[in-house]
Image (cartoon, rainbow, N blue to C red):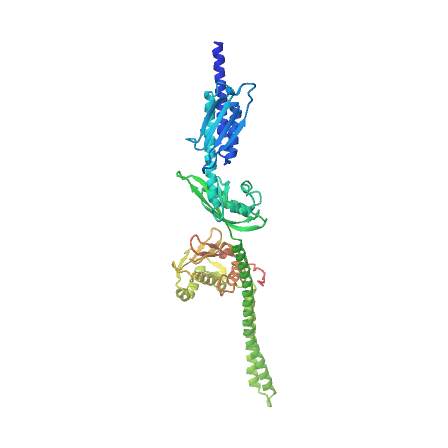
Length: 511
């Protein structure tokens, strides 16, 4: 009874040891880590020598291209004086039909191999065969990728670098292991990494192709702009099997874009200077006319008074003309001051709906000529505001004209313009002008209301600047936002009549 118990305990111990060995074999990283054949064979021989306590292990690998076979032999335990004829052998095929090669194991024990040892040998050979097949497939893929005249990489489904072609290695001056650390070893410029992560990480998680631009370090340490595009390859179950990545250097294009941007800025500066020059010439011409009249009339008046007898009636008439021309010159200066200075103005109760209707009627001919379809949604219960009617209508007119100009090049959809009024949640009234034009670029949002900024070829860039000053003078605000579809919407909001602050704001120069 005791002998049977001891035998059963030994069997259980051997079984547990066999299960532990099987688990260890399945978990060996070389099988699935993309190792090369030499690494896989080394892992196989080390595992068998340690688990089975063998005298030797010999592995013969067949060359997939018909070349000579490669043999590897490892020696394990010594015979301890036993004759070599006592060695027992066992073998296992690598591959279903041994097409990859064969494993031969030898032991000094006569009962080798036991059932558990045969099982471990076959499992190890099967796992090694899978790894060898993957290594050969990777080699074939690498060979194909090396024939591509471009910078190409292959990623795992998790986004880790798995294969890089020869051109990419030469371009970056680093091998596969270094390329696997691209996020931390300076391969991508540190200033670009946050933006790259915002695109790359969600794309890998969702399986959506990605496309971004970043600076990549070249073999000489110089960073060059590259366009990086990744496309997932899916298996028959629609699971991502790998990612294919193509890098295209665009440094020349980026530098050309930067040069073009600088040229545009310089051109805009020249344009503003030219506009100011033309404006100055216009002002000088307008002021010169009354000044010339003043000089002429004053000279005439002096001649009349110097006559004998003096022509008093004629002198009186020319003196009146002198005063008239002086007032004309004063009016020119006054208009300029009103344009560039926050002048105090008289507030009055105002129906914003009525003011908007008058502007629409005033602009109807121009809008019809530009084939603009105007639709109005004016709130029936809109409260009065307190403000300068002419100046607020100037703001509305400027927004309508801007909306019409934004749709000049629209030919594939109706040129629809919506003007809408409504009461906000707070004590304010809002007017909106919505167009279906070319829309707004996020990069220009902060510049729209700056003086002399314009997106129009013939614009001066002061319309929105002046409009915002008028709205702010009414204790309101003016802003814009892109539409969900085509076009953009401009808004201004001012307080209701009961909410207007009566203390006038101090005059602030726009210059």
